[in-house]
Length: 562
Image (cartoon, rainbow, N blue to C red; front, side, top):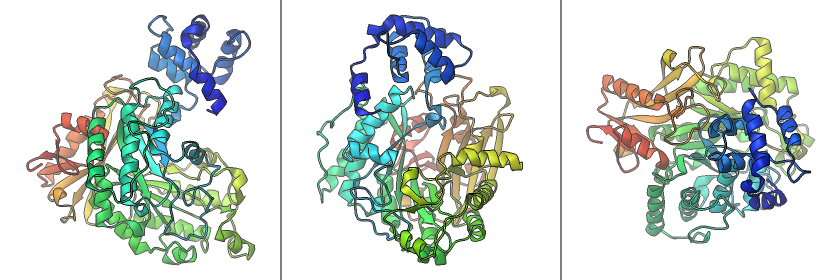
């Protein structure tokens, strides 16, 4: 929402347009379904101030303000669902909120990576997320608050937020900055809804700058903020950070867990040492293996970045490299972002391209690599992206197709290729028959542990919920996890439902998570594990408490010795 439009919305009072809004919303509620054309017709018949049109955000504000005074034919959630412009944002069950850290020197010197002035390494000022960060001066409180408010105004449930802290190599930032940044993000979640859903300029401490060298006092303030979020209106149900393989060690893993992180995005880019060297990545394949091993032993969800079309790669070598992602027991990610290499101004890759040492794949070459990738992704992995969100005018050479995922899905259907990766099977906004839920269990080796992937599916194969559990074969480096099986993720799909709201036709809040946890307990017992630990986010601790888990130092535990 641009500034002028935002100011207009700030002054919008639904009750001043009660008759017009009520007429529009009754018409929307009466239709069997609503598309842009039918909504446009309704809006034209009920103009704002006799000349303009109400925005979707204003219509949603009307639903919330007038629902107790009018019968619109549908409940609030159903009516808002019809007005959502992008319902896919919360189809995965939570509201994603991305914030960027301030610019900071990056330890990497990758040939393909842009260095835009005033931006964190690898980010461009023209990217949508980067623009939001700049508009908020990279302040964590303001970024978080304003993004949550924007999602709320667009009709999304924001009771459960996955907070993604991106922008650079997280573990290369000063520790005091990291502690402060996370605290301020969660401060914003805690304060959302305490007053009006308006734009905030700071918070309880005015968005004060972090202080280099601050120690235990900052950690204590963070813990207090985390404790408050356990029962807040807007809870952090997942905290994601991104880093490099060569910046992951035992100490950094423990610190990420103390911050409340539950998932780590790791840029491995390739599993070929030659390709890594030619692209000046600055780390080895063995360092990638070690980083994944440490994160898995600590219970983190592992989200890897992989890049086809790097310097020295060919479509054939990329096909082989993709196979190593899941053929190598030391890797096997839970989630994957595929970022085809693109030529962006200001990179070393420009020089290599001008010399003829690198060329972008043709569209058909790239599609062939991606078709192979999705067709060979196992059922326990989710491919969250197949292209990076770089504006087309920034790309000198390489794919500029913005809807590449949709085109790829169409190509897979045309070729008759069936995929099993998670994203393509999610129930999303659909409904299911609660009487015909199927249980499916698979397991695979993953470097010093056996991974169990438990899933609940509908009778037509759509994914309703899943659980990831590690059964370690040996004692790890975190004493608290000794002798315990580890639940690394519980995810229930469907449109994000509000906390404590139950709708038997939807996947969210229908007891599926409890069923999976109870199933995991039985499996862990049968395999000889007396305890079950879970890497809970601060906003999911209350949920696990209700399932019988108790707080430990960094994890929650079920069973003896927890």
